Length: 559
Ligand SMILES: Cc1cc2nc3c(=O)[nH]c(=O)nc-3n(C[C@H](O)[C@H](O)[C@H](O)COP(=O)(O)OP(=O)(O)OC[C@H]3O[C@@H](n4cnc5c(N)ncnc54)[C@H](O)[C@@H]3O)c2cc1C
Image (cartoon, rainbow, N blue to C red; front, side, top):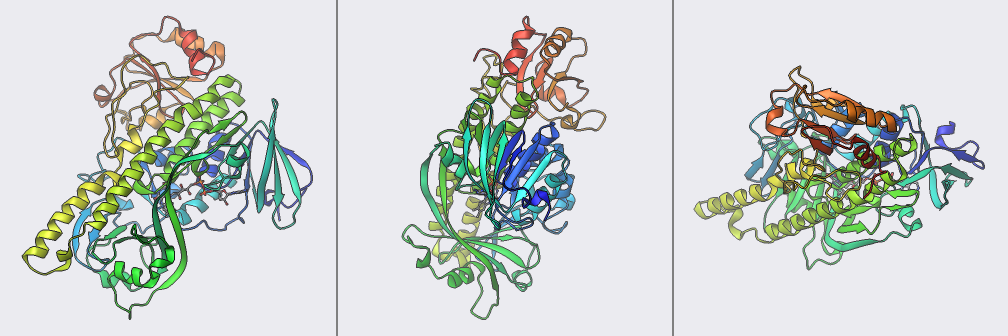
């Protein structure tokens, strides 16, 4: 076994810049982001190399795909998952094999960059969303992280505890096969160790919110006959709505494997209160002769819990370690990836010397309110969906006029309720940081957003509006690795701002934006975009005191 697999030299102290606990999607992404900025990272993971995660997340959001594109792993992810021609649609049916009553069209990955006219094809992004299960996504992230210079991954190693002082943080970890212990000394440590986070416990952070929003019996099955029995156009998400048992069936490999969620009713307090086989057959709409095999099962509580703090001196929490909620809108992992995109550049800025220590306070100030907000969007949607399942009319499967009317009404209601969660433009692009210590606000309010809608804006705190440049490039591909000053009017002077940035060592790339699209989204001549593509400042001319702006951006300003 190699050093990277954690077997050798387990009694010594190892040194690194940042220790990350957990090689789930969030820990791996953070590791790649930090290493790309020149930071040495050691990742501790209790699972074996190649040990698959459980079959959970199915949706990689557009905003996450933008991040993966920047980390040069986007195309590998896009090329994996469902077959290239498999529609990513969501079909509402009376049962999986029953009548279709509504469909939310989402392009297959072959057509993902070119399709038009759909509810998410208008999005201003170089990377539309992608449907792929975590069991396919994680190995791609792992392989990419493993090959990234600066990243060391120790598998079969468990984090037990930590101590921190003014100079660093030391993690005590243990090899699960040999029992040997190792101390890993680092400048900073990030807990990406999931919902049962030991790092969260170690810093005394507490989750609060709603401990039970929903109870779900999930079954991952193999059923090679299901697709042919179902008939009609395929769909990635298949929602059964009938009075006996409503549920969700996600296509995993696009051929024979499926993930079925059976949402328990309020009066079904115990997971065993519902016969699993009966529920699966009722959701699928198949009789006792239908054959399927259970690959794995998981009974879980949908929760809405957010940690009371994301940061204690040299230790941070990211992803499910900091927040857990019902996976409506497919935004659990994706919110964790947004945490990683935020924390990565902040930590690197400080470790690389141009960010003051105060820059690190921005992480909790920015991410905690957003995750609290998203958790409420998801919980409200879970309640609305439960109400819709409870209200399925008895005649939904009847032949004739009454059945037709019931199907038309429920189909419309299902579409209207759910298009916002499956095509959640607001969650992707609408959130903004409005109480950050490192953003220079100008008094203009950020435009409100909903789960499904948003308005692109250059108001400081908002996502830097994406446009296509006249030379065909995505604006995001033309940004520098750290701060970028976007100049919409080439006659505006920027020398004082550049000089101030240089005097503080803050990397600032100047980009003259030449784009026919820009006029609609950009209403200032200068826009300063952060490394995570949020607006930090804007103006029509350089600020009168550029040094004070630069100091604010690097966490050395007044809050
Ligand atoms: C049924 C279901 C469906 C979902 N669907 C979606 C979806 O469509 N979209 C979405 O965005 N999210 C979805 N989610 C949520 C998503 O799966 C999680 O948010 C995501 O896995 C969190 O990633 P993470 O890296 O923070 O944590 P995890 O994936 O939990 O990874 C944590 C890692 O830390 C390791 N670890 C834990 N403790 C230790 C320790 N002490 N020492 C060493 N290693 C440790 C674990 O082995 C694991 O590898 C879904 C969740 C469920 C339950």
